[in-house]
Image (cartoon, rainbow, N blue to C red; front, top):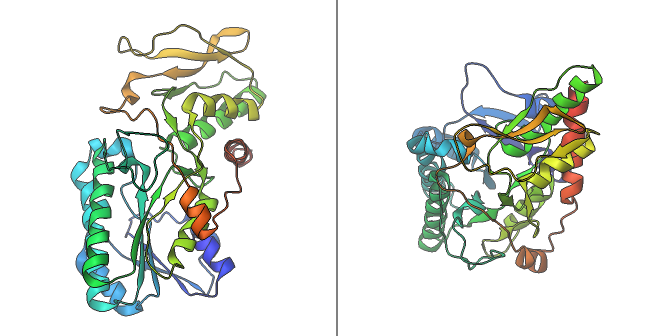
Length: 335
């Protein structure tokens, strides 16, 4: 988002960061010396911190992407997830209401709000049926955004963002976990070493994956509306984790064989899903029960028709190009 705003607008950008004992500036290091980019410390769970920043800067736009956004971890740290992802949004809205009511506010929503879906594809009318603490927190945030919009006449919106991926995706997320592992396999094979296998959960789980660079353009379009309105932002396609794995292996030039007729959901031990082609003694991918979720969402598929028609949003990066970009990036990064 910072890249997009610095390139496409003339705004001064204030980036808000939690105070960390070991700074993590990798994704914005190329902007640290830009006079139009300012880094300030900020904590969504601290209303005094939030109020101070809004009062000081009186921002024209407040775009919130912050959250405990790893769905799998939300069962392990549900309270922390809620405090950041839901209550933190309330802190922002209160600060805007009291200190800068002209500020336009965007909060990143999630397809996880739809959860146990009733129909596909999911559009703006689909009920909220979350299946994780993270999804429930995002649904709560959506409700409070609407309450403040209706009650105080604030410009406040929340987009339903379906999975958006890219080369800066955190390595704990399944897409980046796959491409990073495949890149390591590629490096090992080039160096005549046995590759370390990748461990995943449900390979048949399907998601609607889009490119994050496309999605930030959709967010900016939502902020330019005359009247605030929420939109689904999605690719309109669904692909399985299995498809992602196989495409990433193909991009990396790693030949593979699929292990057929394996019931991955019995027992508590990892089961081999892929081996190196013609070398069954070398496993590439395991299905590991430790990565199964307590409540799995089998299918998420978004309908972006409304944002395409009303705001003119155009998706430029296909699923195949996305996997290619992420895999190639990790291969090049590892040398």
